[in-house]
Amino acid sequence: MYLRDFYGKAIARIFVTESTVKIMTKETSLEDRFQQYVDGENKVEPKDWMPEAYRKTLIRQISQHAHSEVVGMLPEANWITRAPSLRRKVALLAKVQDEAGHGLYLYSAAETLGADRMDLIKDLLSGKAKYSSIFNYPTPTWADMGAIGWLVDGAAIANQVMLCRTSYGPYARAMVRICKEESFHQRQGYEIMMTLARGSEAQKKMAQDALNRWWWPSLMMFGPTDDHSPNSAQSMKWKIKRKSNDELRQEFIDKTVPQAEFLGLRVPDDALRWNEERGHYDHGEIDWEEFYNVIKGNGPCNKQRMDARNKAHDAGAWVREAANAYAAKQAQKKQSSAA
Amino acid sequence: MEYTLRLGDNALILGQRLGEWCGHGPVLEQDIALSNVALDHLGQARMLMQYAAELKGEGYTEDKMAFFRDITEYHNCLLVELKNGDWGKTIARQFLFDTFNYFFYTGLLQSKDERLQAIAQKAIKEITYHAQWSAEWLIRLGDGTEESHKRVQKAIDALWEWTGELFEMDEVDEKMCEAGIGVDLAGVKQQWHEKTAEILEIATLKKPEDGWMQKGGKQGEHTEYLGYMLAEMQHLPRMHPEASW
Image (cartoon, rainbow over all chains, first blue to last red; front, side, top):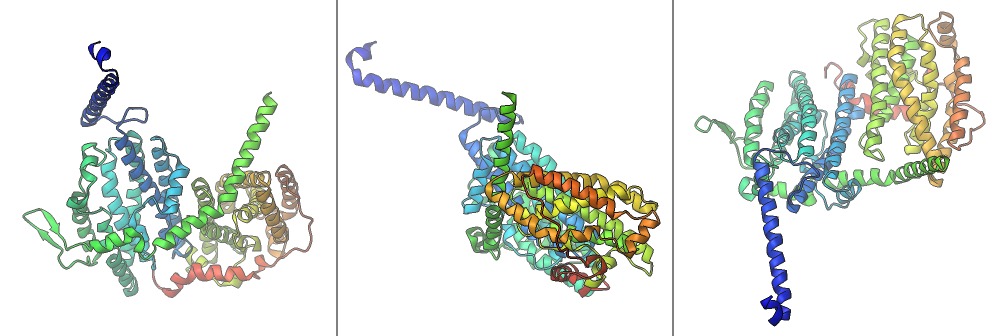
């Protein structure tokens, strides 16, 4: 009352300040409650309140993941028409088809956060959104189908097993389903490598060459080292992520090196050796310059992959329009017959 | 053996063609759907080639059948080896072939050859779905936009001359039919004409008149397209003939 009588203008300011404080208090408490909720290992569901930054981080991560599945179809689809046996052809086609399915689940998971699939796809096609850089490497030989299944899917699984426990419910559930299929793909890839490694000299050479080319890019899939990964801490706090890039990378190396030994193939890293004290393999330096360059668009296939996606999207425009027009006509017919 | 191989070749060559679409479809859902159809054809091809290989003996396998025969030894109908073209052309080809395949395999369910009958029993479920799916798409495109109507009509017109061969009875067909193993194509022809007329009308498309028909695929006389397809499909096993994969 006192302020209102004497300082007309100031009153408004005080009210603004008060309400801001109120909102902030409310917001802080909501965020605190959210954090407590997540800390209690509860799953966040689409209709729950969540911090805007949490929502944005998830949309970015899930859509990148979806894009990776879809772009990731291309390097393997490259071998469907050339697979060397009917059994392999069927398995490869089914695998690439699974990836399209994963893309669908993930776009749906992103849509539960309020994103629109078409907008997300537009961001991919314009180059605004990213996808996993690994798919910017070429697949010149059949052994690449083995190496991708074994190493690339292997690295993806390390990450995705962790994501099965991610705090956002729809994402975690999509991951459970995806992980089952991915482990099947990985076994399939390893089996291709095994067949080659136990085959003729030419086949062995093919397998070793593929390992040489895919090893380092696979290690890069886990992202920058922990001290260069600025978003990681917040993601860990929100339990979107549960292990750091370096931890996951180490897990992958420890698991994969004995598998390579079993195949009789050499991992292309002179510094690789078992460290008894740490209980882990030590490994050589990753070429981060290459990593950042491929992200920037300088990988061997960045342009090719984006061209292929854009071409499919553009060539499909009239088909999507026709399907929509037909659906609209049908809906109208139904409406007029009901009326 | 020859009869089985013809069916196997139809399935393999069409499956191979459709496999080219994977990763390049107009929308993810349809990419998946078309891959499914391709997988069904490849699955049928494997069953048929395994059977043909057994009948042939001499250490033949499904892969030797698929990867070590040259163009003149392939016995598929010409329609399935044609290039995919755009989505409209692929749908039109699927519609024409799937409708044939549906009536053909329905007939094959009565085959006196137990193995073919068993294969037909498994395949007919898939083929029924294919025929349903491609007819639905044909209707959607025919009765969609002006552009889609134009595109798919053009595709139907262009593909028509490749359909006559589907119903052509040669010596092998006659013999198999008499033995109660094969299917009478005259009956299939009539059913096919009735069904395609019905669907084309719903799709607001014009059914082309039967004119000159291309033929020869069943006897090993093919288009130029098949040679390139086989070159691509077969190169790796042929480069390493002793290897297993």
